[in-house]
Image 1 (tube, rainbow, N blue to C red):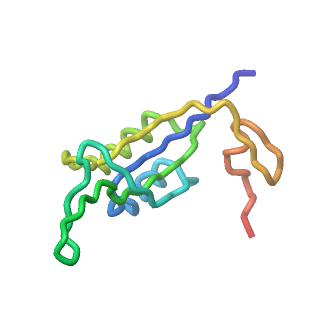
Image 2 (cartoon, rainbow, N blue to C red; image 1 turned 60 degrees about the horizontal axis):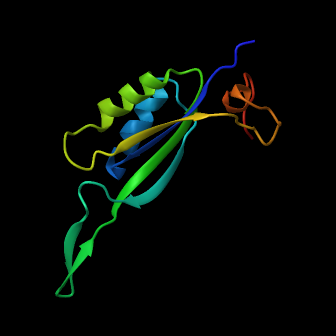
Length: 126
């Protein structure tokens, strides 16, 4: 039996793009995701702010990190969808990282591999 590939995709981008990104990913069948508020810097190197008359270098910019794992949905489809929604052409649009996973485990059932990340037909959480 052929082992299907499990891929993790991390998308780091502007917080104001979260709802639009979630809707677009849901539309292509990506329903499971983890979202975190993160801070980071890249090419923009942050910016200066004045607080109580003193200038401060703010080099960590607020971002969101959306993590998802796919096996049925083509990775390229996820990447194309995310880029279409997130690309403004300006510094700070973000980055996407793609990782190949060796395994996954659904803790509740002990299922492994692709079965651990796929929906169970007819099952509803309570």
